[in-house]
Length: 246
Image (cartoon, rainbow, N blue to C red; front, side, top):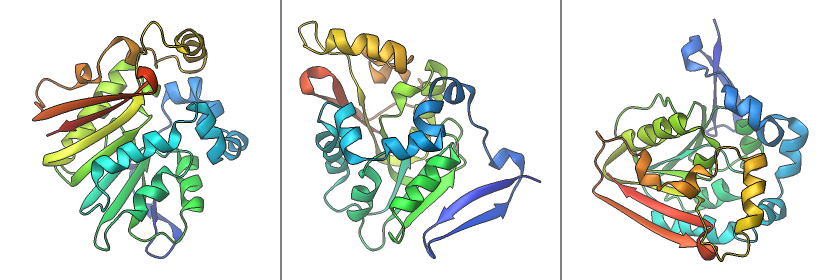
């Protein structure tokens, strides 16, 4: 019988529980094929896990975009929050620092090496729980969370996987709750980085230009109507924050 891995910071130890193979998602083919160098290779994980590097990748906008996402959830964050996919840098730590004493943050990722990396850099942080899950097939119940957040994940997903991930992120949010998304956005034709970023994304991020061509709302399932959708762009339109309210 396979084991599903769960990280629980109640005692800061790594535990494994018995489970079926369905509870232990495999590494998706697109991740192994296109992003092994960024997320699966231990040397690369060590390289990218530096604040200055993630800030450089985002042209100096990491803190601004991080805080835009966190501010959307509140200076003090109560209830249950789900972060879908680990993030290099201090995003999860800053989020956890805003939790009220009774609040809880769950972080899921399909790559165990990413969960282990996050465990190391947030060791001892209370009310933080890590779980090995696939963003496109979450095992949480409907409406289990007060808010969910996707920070620079969607541009890495193929279109059909992206649509399922958005469905899942909305499904697990309570009615009236928020899904906060920060990701790439198509800059205008006069943006100085437009013609530099296009070949970079085409080479390293093969699905990212989807977000230049289509609005994120296009991937919201028709059977999941939203109460509201608000979009804010940053850095001349290269990045966006989209808030979907159930």
